[in-house]
Length: 244
Image (cartoon, rainbow, N blue to C red; front, side, top):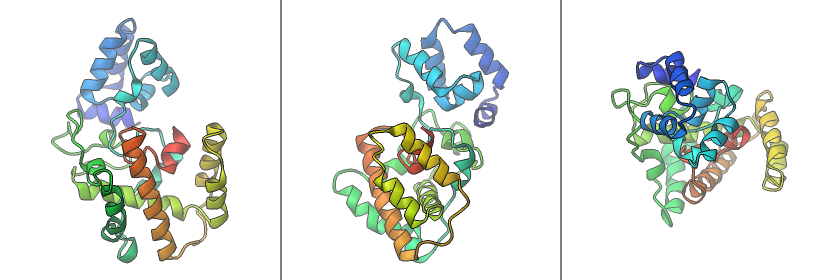
């Protein structure tokens, strides 16, 4: 459980956190401020209380607070479930290396925004564990104790995008691209979940094709990072859209 690991770094148990919440249910401001101070996201609050993210968000919104202000995990702020294993460092070389992908993506983002910022933005509620990103601060349970460098976050970003496209074949990708997601987000989410949860696709892309897919998607995600809000650099990826 992500919340349990994160709170343990702070010397707090799930039971203690739940007791604090129960004692202050009539004071949502107090709970919101405590969560904000210690970097506890709505995903974690959902795990702590056993209530869905929608209920947690609604509780705060009814009191006049925006729950999205709590979602400050570096990589992603959604419960990925079985898709979490797709989040991984990029160890590829050549055209799929971080250096090569960055060389294409960075100039496009820097036309209007700052490419580096999504990978380096400081947040005072993060790095509570001796200046190291814990699994809770990253937003995924299986990766822990990561030095908060741009290179590390960028590598996790590109490694995850590569894994996403490796899970898709051409027909699946075409179906996703053709789906009018904005018109029916629930069906689009179902499509993404079912497609990404299927057995890995046979090798469907050449390195050149895969690099192009990753570059285009990276530009799209980073553009949305600046224009559509959310904090995690993967929040606007297919993983985020599948689990939001």
